[in-house]
Image (cartoon, rainbow, N blue to C red):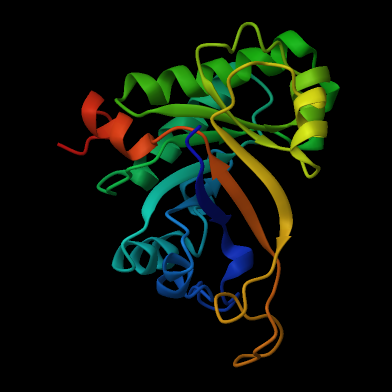
Length: 229
């Protein structure tokens, strides 16, 4: 089985003042990590672009890592989800993304909706982004996959699953056969890659760690997706 190591980052792994990345992506790649998923932004307004998206992208690209992107949703209906998709497509326009783009649905504000409504929102965003030529996937945790979404209606899309447990227990919590990416911990510590605390601190901070079960860079290039041509 293909297993490719990666991480995902957002503004929380950057300097809050100007969005400069704190991650040494070159050191990350030297440790055998091959991809990074970057948060492009959240919500449905252009000023909600992640402050660190450009900095993370530039540094990861310079290090030779494969890059994907994701969007954190607050959409409460289909119209808002489609507006979020428009923002996301603007943010990633012109970016060379060898890995999928993902719709991150986990915010507690959506729990007041029905399962059908939440699933409609996910489909509205992902269908629009896929129609724009991108390899699109769903990000959620095991609880949302089981209790808050109709995964049968979403089966067209690969899943990037957050589930911080052992592989055996994850297989029991998430019983679908196909899993695209597994986010298996939020506590990865890599000395020299991501320092925490004051600038210059050598103590490693926590990172989200992922493993991809498909060679997405090869699949996307072969299919001519993500506007890589």
